[in-house]
Image (tube, rainbow, N blue to C red; front, side, top):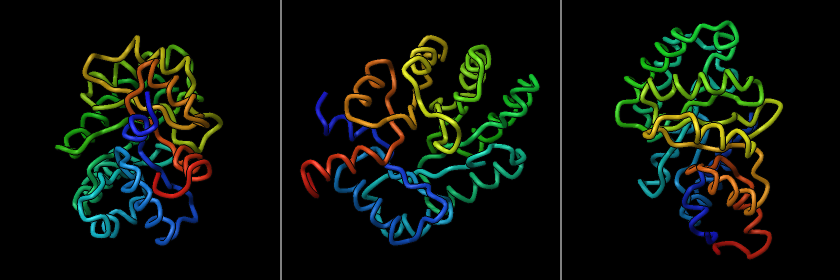
Length: 221
């Protein structure tokens, strides 16, 4: 798989807490230049980014991020607001405490509500695999499938670990046929990206790959 094909699967991401509008514009410019799948940015910048990008790139943003313990009503409002502001894709974080407490139906009901408010926007569910047991990961594969989300996603990038090859393999074996896989975090090279794609990921959440490419080949490769 060549570099351009890999970049077409990347959600080029900038979610740092000190993000400025200048940094967001640069991230958008890079996403457009390298023809990535989307640009993933904080919710507060979505409206400005939509106007700035002028339909040249899909806008992705995050909900309940990074800890996931906002209430269902708050997450649904975040989704509604993000879409009104121009978001095409939503990456939402589950309530990990509910999962640890075995409140599977509560998580399912919350995701179904979020799916409703996403409407035609792509919905990706972040389960933060680094904090979960194998059983919990498998249960979330079932729940995400039943909720009719578009993607299951490994990580926020704000916890103790990112995507692993083992987790992508587990996802592939346990999600429904209509659920795609997003690997985020832990992607330090194009070889990593190829491995994750070969194992079943069709989206990659990272800012590292374009940085590597610019260092090696220069702007606008």
